[in-house]
Amino acid sequence: MRFEEAYEGCRKRNLTQSEAALLLGVCDRTFRRYMNRYDAGGLDALVDKRLVQVSHRRAPVDEVMRLVEHYRNRHLGWNAKHFYAWYRSDVGNRSYTWVRIGYKKLD
Image (cartoon, rainbow, N blue to C red; front, top):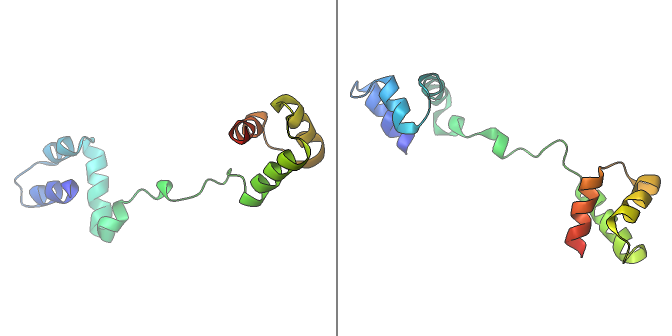
């Protein structure tokens, strides 16, 4: 909503691009980029697509569930260091931190 107000103010020449950018808390160049995107695709073009995309590094759900099942069924009571050593030798290639964070959530 604020962008549309700043955009209209700029188009009607009530605001300069610098003033409109200042209202939005961005630099002049960013406001001009927003204007170009808005002209090309409307408000939908202004949505940051990085926020809705899943990271390519994210572990698949089946891998996480397999790790949880292994821990609960076979390795309950192991500390994170020993569980990670088993995990690397038999099952996976994720980092120690990834396994440790999952391990802490299980306890």
